[in-house]
Amino acid sequence: MDCKHCSEILKPEETIKCTACQSISHYSCIGINESEFKKILPMNKAKWKCPACKISKKNNTISPKLNTMSEKVNNNQAQIIDVKSLIAHFDDRFNSLHSTMESFKSFITEEFKKLSESVTFWSTKINSIESSITSIFDQINYLDKEVAKIDNFGTELEELKLKFKELSESSNRNEQWVRRSNIQINGIPQKKGENLVHIIKTLAEKSGYSINFGTDVDFVTRVAVRNDSSANKSRPVILKMQARYKKDDFLSSLRKLKNLKASDIGFSGSNNPIYINDHLSTYNKALLNEARRKCKEKCYQFCWVRNCTVMVRKTNNSPVIHITSKGSLNKIL
Image (cartoon, rainbow, N blue to C red; front, top):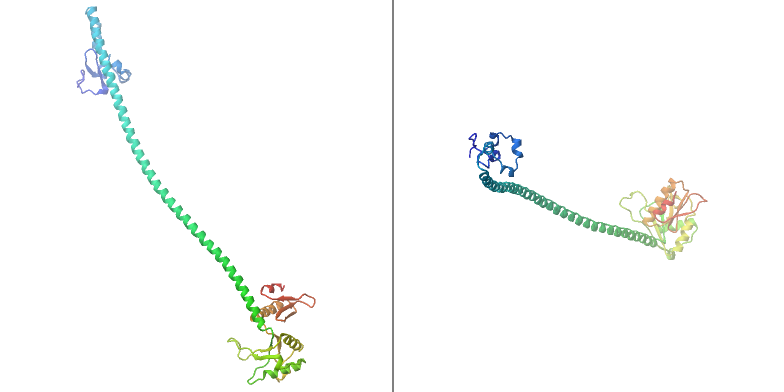
């Protein structure tokens, strides 16, 4: 459709129609600017007349009755046009609203899709985290059990240590009990074909003790040589008495022989010092050696053995300290 005035193609948004002559024109072609055109409401457009028709109306000489009839016809036509214009206006608004709703629907659908994907993603992440947490809890429970085992093992280890200590002490007591009637003599020169019975009798005569080998002595021998012992060093002589009280009496007499040397009992030319003591267990020997070392370090004057027990004393007026275990060595201050 073309404009009545310029004969160019009309666009709906630029068109205005005269209700009188039904001519359709560009609003600009009939002298209406854009601002004025926008102010014309749809219902007013249905009543709008072009300038030519307005002039024609003023010059119209038709009788009042005819004019009245014509006005009625025009009013009816205008009402019909107003209804059509309103319907068209509402159709446009509805179409615009429908288009907006469809666009909004597409937007909501797209956003919901994104939200759904996001929820799925985070749901997977949460499931993964829950799985990791479950795994961590399983490991913690496993470690708790292992720690409990370690604690139990520690308790068992302490119990084993205590039992071992008790067994060691019991073994030491038994070993020392077996040696309770023994006398150990160090420093006697060793030679082939020696007569140990004669040596013991000589020591008894020297100390003034009357000994009867038939009733008082069980045996006399030298102890076995350890692999790391010097081949030139004389092995200790062990004398086992039949009764402990006999051993105590004989040992008491032998200790009266101060600064005894090998030459004093028939070994001419030998100045080896002779030491006579209880026959100590391996554990008690180690205690005696450690006690002697600490006594020298701490300036203790006395360190000796009596009844198979190691004893120390700092001075003549100091109390006697019994060394019965490695822990009691700490008493030597």
